[in-house]
Amino acid sequence: MRRSYEKTDDGILLRLDVTVYARQAVMRALYRLQERCAISYERDGARLNVYLEPLGGSTDAEELAASAWREINFEMMRYDAVRESANVRELLLGRALYASCVEASNAPEPPEEAEESWREDRRRIFESWSAVSE
Image 1 (cartoon, rainbow, N blue to C red):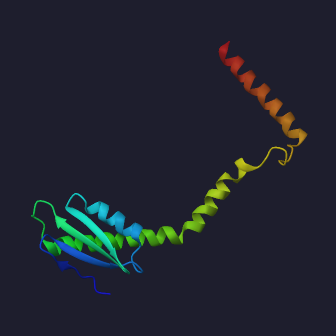
Image 2 (spheres, helix red, strand yellow):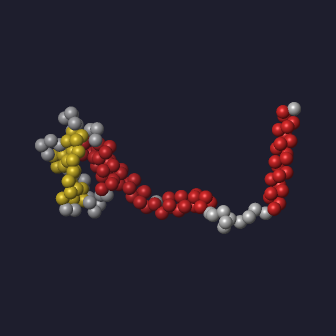
Image 3 (cartoon, rainbow, N blue to C red):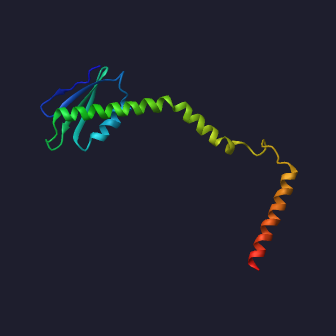
């Protein structure tokens, strides 16, 4: 697919196919360009028409179009990566939070010897502290 633009009186016009480019990715890309140009857009059927008007008049239309396509492609790669890894992120989050979601009534009771070993450890800790303070 050839990425092209049309020159307008005030700037450039990008015609994006909404079946190819996700709206969220395009909006993120345009946000990155907001300091360099005035941006407006409209939906025309299966197309999203994006108008870019350089601020200050110093930006070349070809350079602005190249920057816009670069940002749109970068954001589309990010969008695809996030979408493809959503299940993995949800699984990792679920596993990380699983231990905190187990109800205490269903949790297994610790063995009694664990309680005794804890008491012995507590005695040893207090003994070492009392030896230091004397």
